Image (cartoon, rainbow, N blue to C red; front, side, top):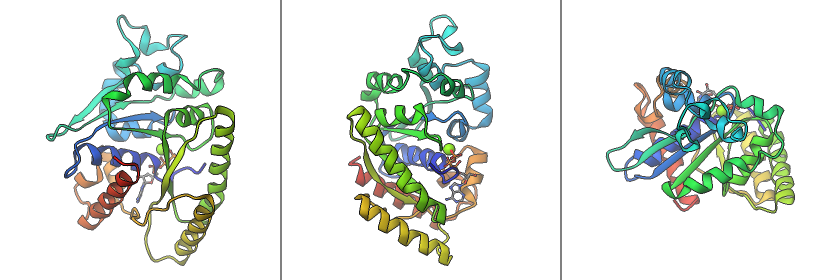
Length: 271
Ligand SMILES: Nc1ncnc2c1ncn2[C@@H]1O[C@H](COP(=O)(O)OP(=O)(O)OP(=O)(O)O)[C@@H](O)[C@H]1O
Ligand SMILES: [Mg+2]
């Protein structure tokens, strides 16, 4: 319920971390569930997105939602929904990152959303045994795509930028979860709140963290002690299509903090 808090950036870095960092050798799938397709561009890189998704007319997450109408990616001969899963990188230890990219036309699904909320979770049920971790990158506004994400997920991770507007957003996301659980009779856990873009000096930041911690305690939500620092390496990584720990000038203390958060998240969800 809040844009630009670092959802896509965090999602991409978590994927790379668990597939190939240090002792992690997990099989990871990232599903880009945002018509803005930022996670696709970040993880694939902008030029590979153009060639392997757009020019190749590859099926994307849009095809999963429009499978009855056979969206363009499925029209080519012999293509199935499983062709929407692209292998991004194999790490030496055996871990890998796969991705289901998104495309702008996913916004058409928002105009005609009826009966489509179960299509993603149905598809994921068929392929989930191939993965240890499936990350779904959500759009900032609530829609049928949010419901599809809740139906697919066991847990949600909530990145929070420590500023005043975040405190307003948290009750909205709780209401959204409560409404969902009542309508669909499925529980979705909250794996925790991740403070992102922390600079560690502003009084406003500390005030916001205090308020978020109080709200989270009232909601019964975990708040990670490990925080993600503010760093220019994140936009730099997005430009280069690289994890934070591979960017050309990521300071080692930034990489270490990102690793610490990722490891804590892995522990929290029992990975
Ligand atoms: N820890 C960080 N420090 C500095 N910049 C960051 C950090 N995390 C993300 N960014 C930058 O902030 C911007 C927004 O990040 P991102 O796209 O991940 O947010 P989002 O929550 O996915 O946005 P949206 O709601 O539009 O999907 C990007 O330019 C990204 O590079
Ligand atoms: Mg995003």
